[in-house]
Amino acid sequence: MPAILIIDDDDAVRLLLEDALTESGFDVVSAPSGVEGVEIAQTEHVDVVITDILMPDKDGLETLMELKKSCPDIKVLVISGSGEFLENSFLEMANKLGADASLAKPLDIKQLITTVSDLVR
Image (tube, rainbow, N blue to C red; front, side, top):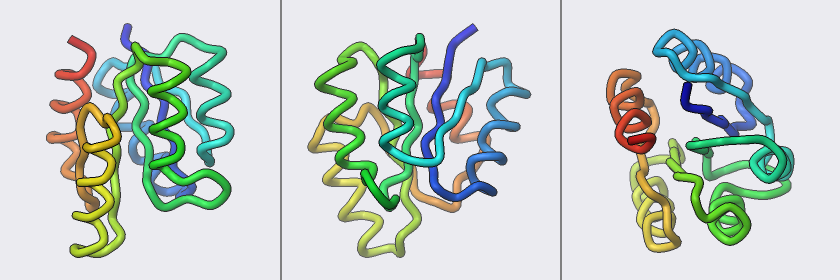
């Protein structure tokens, strides 16, 4: 069963993603911050990380760069919902920094499942 790590400081979003991915057959673990998420990725088996961009302590771009450096085999899906202009800027930057995929919030759950499934193949 593929292991997915969700990193998002919004409890409601994290719970929604956990439920949707678990129901789709993934093994899911989550963290409320980039700091905790990177620690989990470095100590547990994870196939895909889904990380929000705007978070306190360590934002999603910092998290992405650290994961790509310390865990290069992990696929990273970046999500953002910071408003259309900023959202596009952040997602473009994430793609340039090595994100394997990116999606804008609000998320389409079917698209999320499809994207995660593609990343674990």
